[in-house]
Length: 212
Image (cartoon, rainbow, N blue to C red; front, side):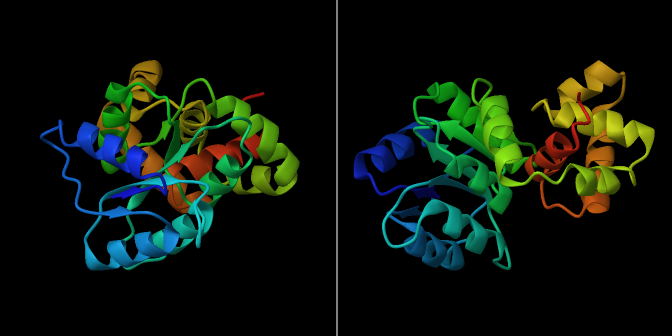
């Protein structure tokens, strides 16, 4: 599903996504309210959601999309421009974000990665957004460290690399593990930390300064 108040953006994204035989565009929406309606009518696997929209903004929409019986995974779209709303979108449950000028091949790759349960944070902007806005918004280092202390040493190693934005196969190569083993570790990490996706786990890791 494509959610953006700019009709030209929706058209361009739809044209791009339909070039991939593994992706079907089943719904479009011009704002958050329409997105909730469409996600209720259709079984949406991945939603590309703009941040700033009329009636209901993208952050509120993400929260409500994630609360559905069959919640779609969400990629936030933004022009960035030092947009603090990006952090709020990730904290609300988005599985990643892309800049609107992202290379088309990377947008297609992001949809597949997120659909498979991974995350996609724009490599140039990810650390900048997390560092700039996460610490300013939620300085909860002690609480974050207390939650992360429940992890095993190996799970902590995996979380440290998740926090850098690496995909499972890259983490497996870095730690000398199989992809399936990394996937199992990530699943246990999310459960132990009480978060819904690896982006929220990464934000918690940043709060705890586990990579410093």
